Image (tube, rainbow, N blue to C red; front, top):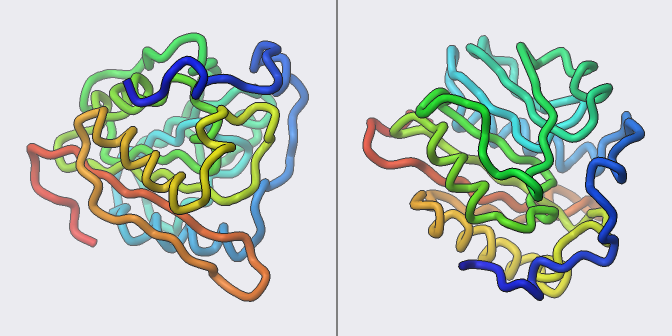
Length: 209
């Protein structure tokens, strides 16, 4: 078990769907972060890839690739419906139900941008990410120092940025995935810090970068 019960605690214990009931058509990190995120996606995505964008919103920050099927997930219907990158989407509260309604090995990439801090059962969710990834597929988890602090779990709030990267690495390991790259950098002066953990499901040919 990666997180203890105290680690999972949130300041705001109200149901997550209630907190996200009203759409927020804003980005939660700055443009420098988002540009770096799109560049990182471009490093790992290939034309035709099937992509699952988990815990997403009205924009997915994907590169200009001719991707295959793109499925989105989030907690606000209006935000997901406005995301032109998605072929389909669904709403689900991962803190109440960690089982994804998706087939085994259905995706070449799973993306999770600036949302991992809200997961109370990350090992279970990451195990589902692994299940839906095809062998050789990648998971890209990105984050910064911005968050809704009342909804982030205690384990996240109590850690430094480098410690948060290490924590995501623990989630990856607990799910049976292999970390292939950890990024921690400042894209520019006075910009949001950019952190990402990239992991891979073994058992197939590695995707070329």
